[in-house]
Amino acid sequence: MTREDSKGNVLRGFGETNLIGIIKSITGSTEDNDLEFIEIDGNVLAIKIDGISLSTSRMPFMSYFDMGWKVMTAVGSDFLVKLSKPLYAVVSITMRGDSDVNEFRELINGLNEGAKYLGMKYLGGDLNEGLDDIIDVAALGKPLAGVIGRSPRIGDVLVTKPYFGYTGLVFKLYYSNELGRWIDSEIVKEGIEMLRRPRLEINLLNELLRYRECISASMDSSDGLGKVLWTMSVNGGVRITVNELPVSDAFLDSVGEIGNVNVEEVVFNGGEEFLPVFSIRRDCLPEFERLGFKPFAVVEEGNGVYFRGSILRYRGWDYFIGWSST
Image (cartoon, rainbow, N blue to C red; front, side, top):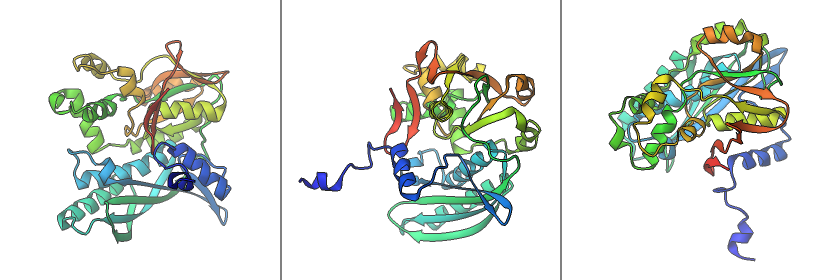
């Protein structure tokens, strides 16, 4: 037996989804949702933990303040999409010993301001020294509309805010070493701002609660729209047919000016838009359109995700693999 054989498969290439399967097999967990819901003495609480490594997540245009804000947004986004109110957050921070004290202050300010923007109280947490800068945020809140899962109803319409493509475009240009060339483009500037300081529409919560009975399933787009669609399709045992791209006219009008960009790729394999995707009854569509949502797909009998008559090849972000497609 070789040394590699004795160690088994390495994590890189094994994939986040498969690793979650290992966790479930060991712990016996059957839950698969953006939030975890627990009952204590008759009270149902919602909990969420999310984290980032700055060595892999921080882009050159992002400050430590931005990173603190971003990880709070990542947690808050999961509460919003499940119609739950985030209330309290605790944070575990690991930083390198040679980090600057002012960077630490920036990070804490970003975390605190991000929490306040979402109506949360940042309580404190844990501090460690390590070889990388790592931020983990755990939040506790209150579900306001029962448990909403990831399995859409046949006959539903999928709706979201039409702001996809911006972050995917920045990622594409950055990893192709082309970002500097297009840095003055308005849609690139917008994408950078969305990545630096995502403005989660937490104020929508009360409005969305009025239409709780319309919603059968929901997810947020932190790992890409492709992953949302494939997860909903598999969980619900349904076919999802995408009829149009959930993008703005401004994005479509300008993206053609930037060379070598596949629009479908940056829309479906973007991520970090932190946009809610809801599966709703068709008769509820006018109410959601009034709130700025756009219908872009339908839920049908069958299985798989289809766009323009073909199976959707983009599958979003998966840690230990990266952006994936078939």
